[in-house]
Length: 458
Image (tube, rainbow, N blue to C red; front, side, top):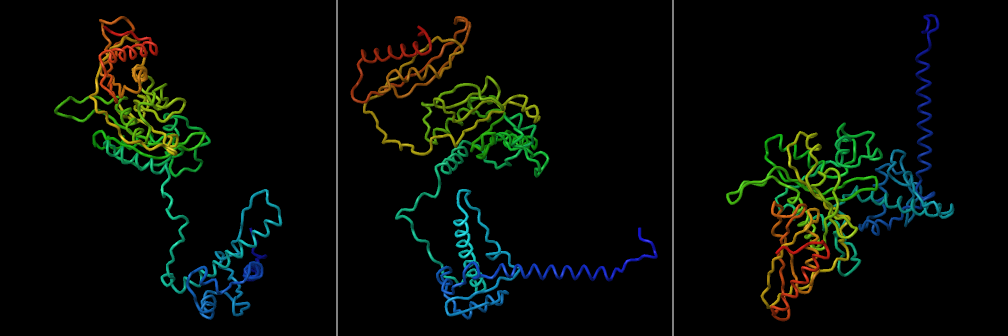
């Protein structure tokens, strides 16, 4: 509170404030002008650089006039160069913005020398730009870049080519591409996998986008739920985008299907299962150069997949993807009815570089043979183990092995199942005799028995 008898002189106070502001502005402008004298510590503007840098020769008088019109005061000038003072309000012109970050191991003299060279080059380039743009950039003649090599290098990396090929392949299989945010809500991300606090946003763009997503499946699920809520059937969606873990970022091609197969006159509709997602994943990996015969299925896929109805796909210790049905608790949290199946292909783990091109296709002049085998194995033995063992019995003659029947019924011993395979035999140099065919069949049976403990079903 100020008493009525001691009123301050407001006009005097205001004049003091304005005078101090004016003095501060004059000092700042003088400091900026002193720091912006191009040539005092960055070198003068050589007029010949207009043709060297910009490819457009302009008379020196015209160039100086353009700089003067922009507020660049001329300090000195001769036939080859002009020294100008940068206006205080042009913070975009070097050396006012000349700041370099150097490696820690450089000594002080080296840093000073590099900083001076950087300031000189940047300042001169900025002045050339100022002169050229006033006359119109359309007046600058276009110049083609010098070719580094006779044959230009590829514009796309193997990773980019793989992503492009994956888009075409998945689109041809009836999946529609989506582009979602790389963020999800923390609760949803925790249901999809790991959701570490280190990947949580302190200032998200929305309350439900506060966590970097571990997989694009979360974004696909949200898009799937919106389509279902609007009565758009059971869409099939895919996205190629990043997934984030504590170890870093991964490029993932993910796809999702839900509901049942389309209605068709030839066969009844059925609910989708994990093998539908497996078919999409294997087709994608084969298109990217990974032979399905070299892949193996091992272990459960983990969240967000259903335990016992999902698996990892890889080759040896490498893991290239995973597939399966999504967990019922995840679907219930989003108010979705199952089944919903999904897959992931880890594009940054695939052997994309140094891949051998496929050789020419060789066709045998001899008719192929087909032989069927049925084996009794334990219920926990995967059919893939039988297929792999039969194929390895004689790789030079056996072209393909397929499972065509799996039976578990009352007529079989407890804990056993019957797996029937078809072996395609393709001779290349002669017609096989009955004895050779019988010997090959025996090698197939022995290989499967040794690998899986199976018994040939008579």
